Image (cartoon, rainbow, N blue to C red):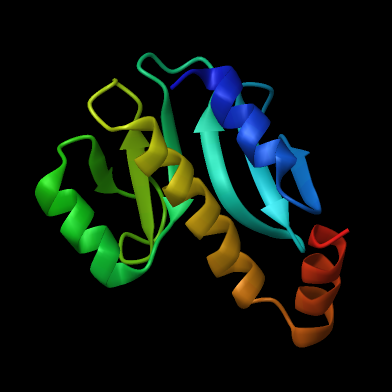
Length: 121
């Protein structure tokens, strides 16, 4: 998976805002003002940090060396995925979408309904 694929997928999710609060080399993707993905654009290999259900995060870390606890994030709820071709693209895409959904599910009902409504258009 390439940097552009990660950026394109994150940007394609409904109501996503791309932000650079940590400088020009760290892209942060948010929905409803809450972060769901973070990537250092110049990192080699590329990494992306994602929100993840704690039990799934634990299982993924046990099974894949490319999945580590979230770097500088809550280690229970965040993972950092190294995109070194060891993980199938479908798994990474799924994790990105799951991260987005977890954040949307945590939004206040009014915002959550607005995000889901615009996604169905």
